[in-house]
Image (cartoon, rainbow, N blue to C red; front, top):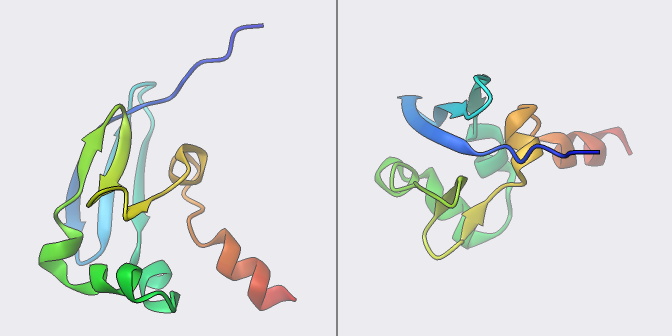
Length: 93
């Protein structure tokens, strides 16, 4: 069994907190980070509500990273556009 490792090849700011993320298998996702950032109680995460700070991301080793890994997401959550799944689970409880 061979497992393909998925990498991000480009990420572009489309609007406010929306990034278009292109993966090396040809998949593209438009991921809106606003809900995640605004629902977080952690001040270091909420700091990324500042547009300049949010736009300071980079791609490192195929992953989307902000700061010194201050903010990063599991690859499959980005790939499946499910970064809010943890907040949705809390709301359902």
